Image (tube, rainbow, N blue to C red; front, side, top):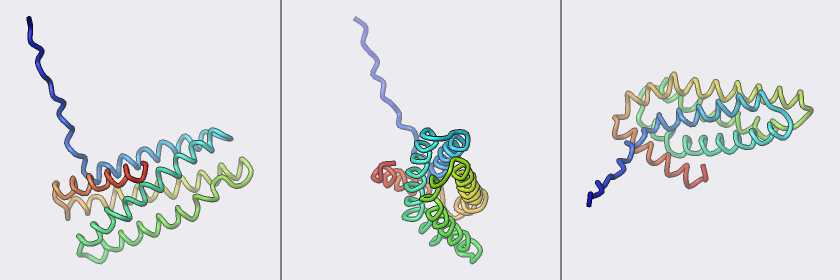
Length: 158
């Protein structure tokens, strides 16, 4: 009788914080693209998903990643990036509740502006903040931050 070879699943290496945040950005970019191409009830469903994703993403950044980044950087210009990112979150929070108000054409315009705000924010993080973070955190620190982000996201239902 042949014996079965026991296989164990190797767990994938933990994603670092930047990889997780970029993955969230891609998810929201895809949803925003769908929102611009839909209307009515379908658009409302997509906007609800966007709102949930953005809320959870912003919260984990503001609770975990941003403070770690702010505390790790030493240059004034690098800290300025932190404050701008927090302010951009605040602006998105102000715009989000009004996105579905108005006629179909008005909602389409709101969605377009929301898309531009979020894409600008994500692009700025990816081109400015994340490269600076890679310089001030080592690989293990980024993985530890990634684990904390992942756990908090799960706790928030994301």
